[in-house]
Image 1 (cartoon, one colour):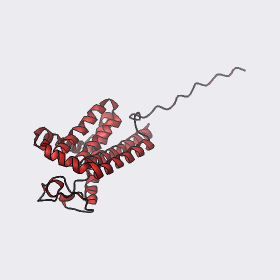
Image 2 (image 1 turned 90 degrees about the vertical axis):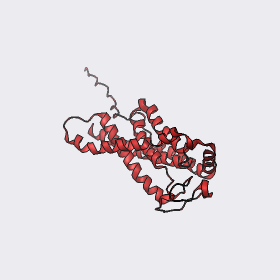
Image 3 (image 1 turned 135 degrees about the vertical axis):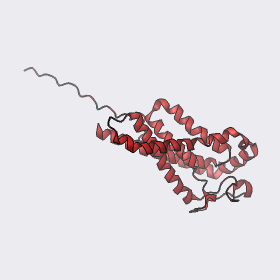
Image 4 (image 1 turned 90 degrees about the horizontal axis):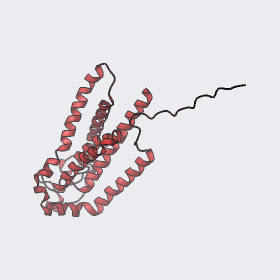
Amino acid sequence: MHVTPSPPEHPRSAAPGAAGFPSAGTVARAGLAGALAVLACIAWLDAPLAVWVHQSGLPAHRLLLDLTYLPEIYAACAALVLLLTPLRLAMRGARRRAERVLLAMSVSLALASLLKEVLKVVFGRAWPETWIGGNLSLIQNHYYAFRWFQFSHAYQSFPSGHTSLAFGAMSVLWLACPRLRWLAAAACLLPAAGLLGMDYHFLGDLLAGALLGSACGVYVWGAARGLEDRRA
């Protein structure tokens, strides 16, 4: 008896953007490493580095100041995307992947913006320099401390909000578009360099903001990929 062999089964193709998405273990290890790096900065690096930056004259460079405004541009673009999203949803036609990526970037940035405000109040860290109504600071008052649950802007250095916004948006771009990772990295590192060079934040603040924003990006893009899988 002749039996016709059945065609080989092909594995289900991965959903768009699946390549390069980190596993849960990788995310956990990266988060732990990031948290330990933040603690190491707080214990040993933040204070001496902030003093060195102040004494070096770096804050006098206008280019560094200009770099600190980049996350505000990202936030404005994200607000525009979120504003136009209901109109786009009302239109007929398939949603392009680029549109889904931009929406995920905007949602991640918005989530990071919300969470960083909560964490600033919880940690209540004093700033490196004095610029808010005579706030106590490391440079002017040798004041280096956390004061938990403070609503005053004088104690909102940790985590860095601008860094949270940058990494919140660009971590989605990093995951969704591997070919544009150079752009995502530059869009994160340039404002971070400006914030550090202007002595606006401690290094630990920047790392904490990067960790927060990246976590938001992984969460939002992971959820977006889950929706794509269910629709496939």
